[in-house]
Length: 98
Image (cartoon, rainbow, N blue to C red; front, side, top):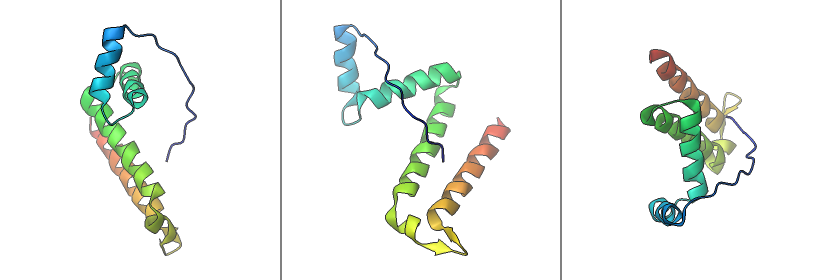
């Protein structure tokens, strides 16, 4: 699982764009939405590829945070670490197929 330190970066928006961003973000934090959009642009990936990678990252974080999956081990490996490895392998196979 990747862990990266987030560095604050200020962006100035027009008032109308700021209001629209807040409305679109709804229950989701606008900062995460803007971060995802910037990452997609900088990495030069399309919407599908970026969405796929975000889903992989989100699900690995969810599994790593799950108390049951992190506390139960089979053959010396926690269920969470095994699932995360499997998901990352699947994501690598997808990336190679492109």
